Image 1 (cartoon, rainbow, N blue to C red):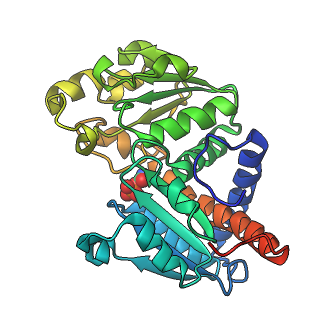
Image 2 (tube, rainbow, N blue to C red):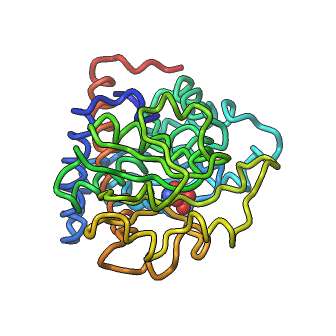
Length: 315
Ligand code: CP
């Protein structure tokens, strides 16, 4: 593919190919071996219109470990603040001939629209409530390494699913790889299209967590609640926060995941997040660099091939 815009259009074999390459990069990273030739001579521009700690820093590290020249656009100080549109901003950058654009934007579909206006590879680093494909891929790699497989697992995704692009991308990826996905959330935080997602639905944590292999917790995304109902944090933690008692309903060897940023004492008890026997939250961060290296490596190969065949047209 020319871009990585979402999980929706990926084939299971493409997911496996990417995860295999990411596994290789994860091992290289652990050994401190860099592969500067992979993106040598290429320019990567990171455009984050929304805040980020993990995604932006890991895309930057991934590009540098593969030898790209990496530029982080500071969107807070850019001319977007003077009214320049996303597309005009993209066309301006495109005229500087980048090879890879990494884009996070608050509107669903914005990154896809942008990809149609530029002649380089575009990676979606999160667009509104729509998709966060590299997050789902790093979660998949973390699960595969912890469980030894990525199929026929029971996986519970818990919390604010309605506002979560992480949940949407994970539901699609885990479903494509033939896992059983359970969603656990209060009815107000369940997406309206839940019956079309091919998942099991629960509003009770103990019932939903029974015998699962993987527990994936999500933050309450108040910034997307548009003035709607926001639960009290104390009440929410009591009913939906993951603590040792609720986790005891999952399998004894179930792993605990969280994409971050985490709100301790709201959706997860701090002692569970820090329990190295259960929590793989730091491994998720580690796999984030490896997955982003693999995604940019594959897109750069595709871009070089299309350029050699004269297929990359100047827009
Ligand atoms: N998981 C995730 O996307 O984190 P950031 O918002 O910090 O990038």
